[in-house]
Amino acid sequence: MSQPAPPTGFTAAHNPVDTQLEAADVLKIATLAQLQLSQEEAARYASSLNQVLSLMDTLSSVDTEGVTPLRSPFDHAQPLREDRATAEIDRSRFQAMAPATQDGLYLVPRVIE
Image (cartoon, rainbow, N blue to C red; front, side, top):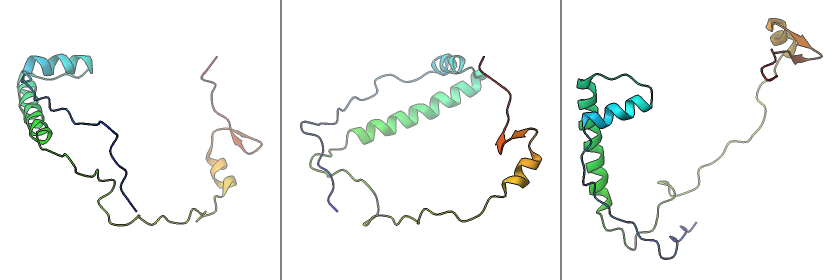
């Protein structure tokens, strides 16, 4: 099975990270995500995120010209199991536990008016 060719004219842009995240940046993001962080936690997260961004910058600088994109780390297609039912469902047993049923269907409260 052959690998697909990269799109014509495609080049990976190398944009190094010029700025470092600070605790204040992390606190702002945490506020937007409705998370509460202490100043110490924000400083730790900023340091960790800066390490990740630095690694990404290092990876971005690697010359990949002429490298064929990898679709899978495996040499062959992974086998798929046959799609078939493996167990019978006893509907009457499950519906006996339900708060309300009618004609074999589960009745639930209306949520859209």
